[in-house]
Amino acid sequence: MNGKAALQRQRLNLAVVIKQFAITGGAEHYAVKTTHYLKSRGHSVALYARQIQAGLADGLTLHRVPDRWRFSSVVNSLAFALDAARMLAGRHYDAVISHERGFSQDLAVVHTLSYQNSLAGLGWLKRLERRYLSPRAWLHIYLEKCQMRSARLVAVSQSVQEQITAFYGRQTGIQVVSPGVDLERFAPQPAAARRLEQRRRIPMDPGELLILFVGTEFRRKGLDDLLPAIGPGMHLAVVGRGERLGRYRRRVRRLGLEGRVHFTGLAVEVAPWYAAADVVVLPSRAEAFGMSVLEAMACGRPVLVRRRAGVSTLIESGSNGLLFEDPAELGPLLSRLSDPVLRRRLGEAARRTALAHGWDAAGTALERLCCRFAWGHGP
Image 1: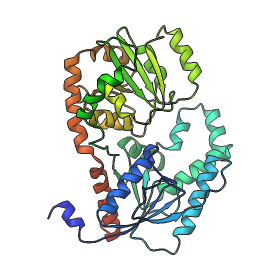
Image 2: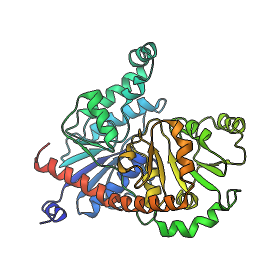
Image 3: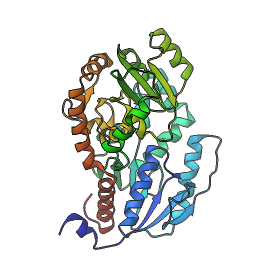
Image 4: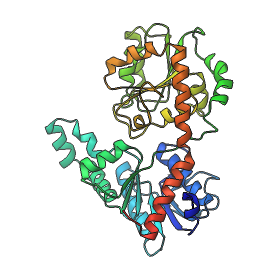
């Protein structure tokens, strides 16, 4: 009996907890895709959420969680955790899956690096102030500790798993289930059809290298490190609306990169930008996963990724992408990627890697964990 056939033995009564059930950020996308997969497998799914995108919750049992205490994001998160716990009390589910930091989940999907990691790089005085004198920090750490007490933890990357162990000493009951990718939406053939049309939006010569950076947090995602690495014959498209845009425009001028760095703003559909790009770069200083990289790989694009990003574990440097640690490596690696033969080889291997990471793979792994919990099999 194969794995999926074995799971047919029992239909589960499940609950999913998420603030926004919508195709917005990475956690929300993960929740929507895996919940749809669980529903498609015949399991009964109750959804506890504040905001639900029209059409996404068809076939689910809906429980609308109130939106309270909106004067502070972390206090708002505490209110959500309290209200969700109150609404779940007295109801029986085979497993409660939460994509938020809360109190009542059986399986907690951990989408972010530990809040304690954000304190680790601070000086001792600043760390003391942040950790012990900030009510905001107290609430963040409190909610994270509650999340860590869940019976099962699902980390979206090995990096997240390592931080759970480092900061909370948790050794068991953790499994990595990385996000998936839509292999039809992000694919080489549609990318090729869109390529020339999208590249016309950038004033550049046909033979020049177009580098793509996708993100809405410019500093954390390493745009400061990437800009100085843009050399002759290269253009950089920055897709996203990051903080302090004026500062970055001034830096572009100081570096003499005017006309070669293009801030496009948010994109309703990012797939055309993958089509246009020659290389996709993620130089993040800290990243739980990095969906833009997996999407680019599915499109058959070569990727250049900092080892600190969770998605870096999917990349064998020199085989299906390139990895770096020191920002000083970026310039030489981008120059190396000017070779179209190398780009084609890396891109083809990247697509083969992505084929093993469709959303069905993530959904199946989460389904197995729910079954193991419900049936009481192992940690």
